[in-house]
Length: 209
Image 1 (cartoon, one colour):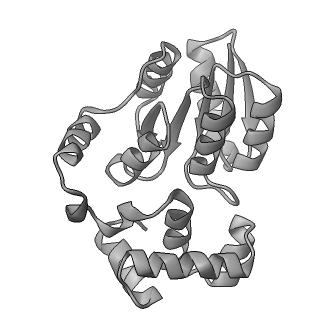
Image 2 (cartoon, one colour):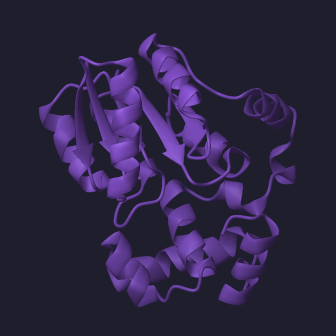
Image 3 (cartoon, one colour):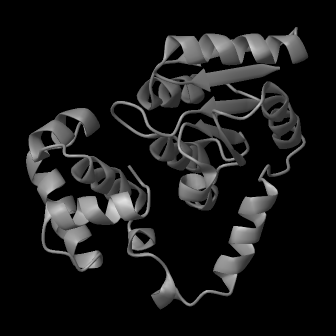
């Protein structure tokens, strides 16, 4: 069995590897420090499961998900993030994730999730299952404004709300300044807001930063 762990923190990668080797001692576990590296590895190697962080320098875990769905659709991707599941799990699942776990989850939960996605099944908690059912019954115009954003717009939105300048976002996401400015304009239009300060207040209200 081959597993790829994608996270920009060495301590996290080491801890995950140790947990997984206790359960799967014969597994070949490789590491990637960012989504770009993981994408390149996924093009040359066949993995049974990819475990990825959501927020990393450069391309995000959502970008990795999008690429895997386009080029390696059978490879399950399990998102393991510092963000609480109620904030990002549904977006990750809609993007094609096989499951979503908070990094605060117990090691046994990670093993359970990996075993489940290896069986070709999805892994979600009871609370997220309930939220998914609630969303099916919720009219589109009642959904929070940020759920209208594309994955890349959502990434840019979080960085703007977190106080990053256009040039800083350009460097972090490896996008041109004009492209970031275009994303910002789209975000403000979609969310019916006029300033970065409004975006920040909104993000704090919904606990997105």
